[in-house]
Length: 115
Image 1 (cartoon, rainbow, N blue to C red):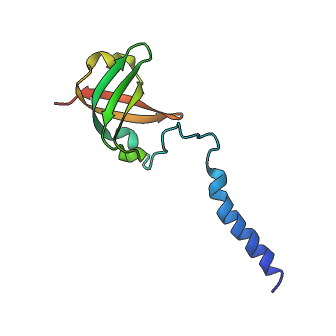
Image 2: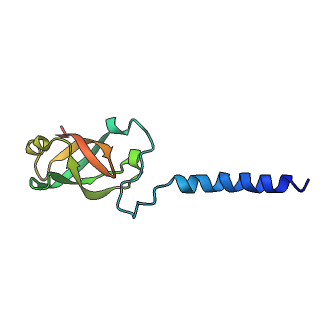
Image 3: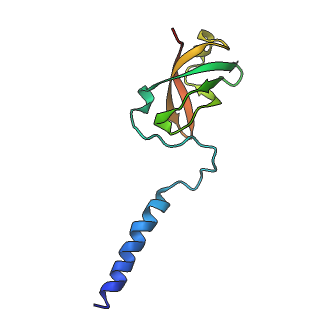
């Protein structure tokens, strides 16, 4: 019976240590949370444009909860996949937008003024 204890202890260690080692050690609270759903890129989110920065190719949006990314409502700047999208919106517009994960960032792949 004694030889079985080391095997059980080793199995327990692997079971508990594996999830911790699978996490990235490079996230210092600046990265967007991982998506819960692989189809998150097709989910339409809503918000209000607060600022457009043509130099950085970013738009600041006060948005509702981004459930696919496990994020609460907040105001934040997003990069855009195609900078020409920034010419179709202006500060104060209510918008519908689609996000996708690009590395550690969330990038807008589609945005349009809400009707």
